[in-house]
Figure 1 (cartoon, rainbow, N blue to C red):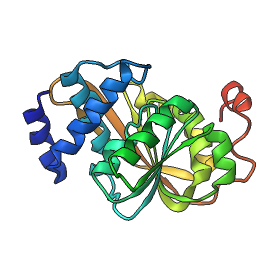
Figure 2 (cartoon, helix red, strand yellow):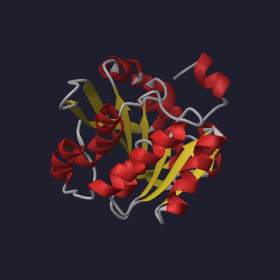
Figure 3 (tube, helix red, strand yellow):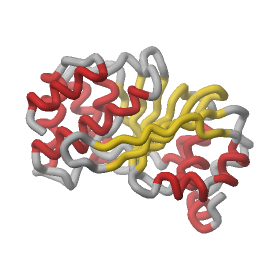
Length: 229
């Protein structure tokens, strides 16, 4: 996807700040030459698979004035593109310190005031930030039944979790049926789409928290993995 192609796609979200997204692209790929941030190093693929793909949750929810946590953000995706597209307050969470250091340096250098990067394992962070966030989001981190237990404790009752998934999304929803009941959440919408150039299929699953999550969750990660809900 060319720069001009991305600008055309941005307009469907009411965006035209192409310079901000190009700055993010250049910074991520330049830093990637020093240490691994992303496996996608081609500029045209990066625009579609990292920047554009990160913005599709805007079709499901209005992020403005919300408090949002991005779990397993890696190099800052989808959190950084979404932060450039809204005035939501973002916490970008990852357990790899060099990635979070890069994010915090980037937002400081570019005077991006609605983002903070935090180094932590998500299940540990969740224990200290119960029902703090209006929206949680995660892109390609873990199976849905695992993610739900880690993420839902952080979300306010009435808030949302957007799980960004690929081809196995519908199977993951079926396997997570017990987790939905146990953790107090329901699937409200599923946005299925094809990326415009690669034609890769995506599913963004909108999950609403309808009642408080039992305080025994999340369990230790070893338990979550070995005995998932």
